[in-house]
Image 1 (tube, rainbow, N blue to C red):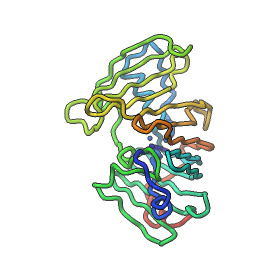
Image 2: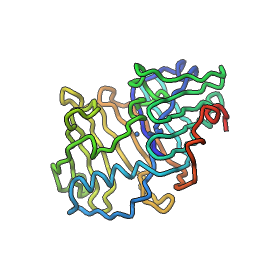
Image 3: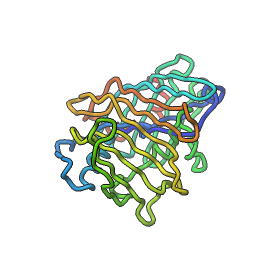
Length: 272
């Protein structure tokens, strides 16, 4: 399952009328570990190997799970429970389970196309290209976060920029600079990895002017499906102090035998 997480604020009225879909996890941002995690990396591994390992934590052959998302803005706070399925990088389905007024709202991703289903009006809407920068589910993740298809290694040049202790934890910091022609909106990323178990701690995103735009923090590392993964992901927009989107993974299963046929418009509308 691949979860990815989003960014531009949506008001409560729009939330109730539409509800896009995360990555997420789709969520696309939120995500699931890849089967090839048996590969061992250490602090002495190459920067590319370590960043590939971290990137693969949020990818998977196929997966199914449940998560809770909490969005905190200046004006309101929202919580929802979701079930999601994914197959590789190109297929994902996220369905809202609660609150009851949003139950059945769903988002389907097939390659670079995304559809939302709104059960209250029984309508399926395809997200236009111009809407890809919009918020997913009123969160601080965007549709662009959902459709990222390539790996960090494919899009960025990786350089180790720091090794040492911060806040009592030994970390490795990597600076990722976009390769020429890479479809990337960021001028650079900074990734912090914990040396003790090579788990990601934070990713910082810098805009085209070189200013910090948002920070993703990882935490609550637990074993799910036999793999150590971060089960809490927090997105913090730099221009809105105090606002955040947090995704908590409650259940994750891997290699669940899904096929491409599962990810259909008919399934999007099923509500189960």
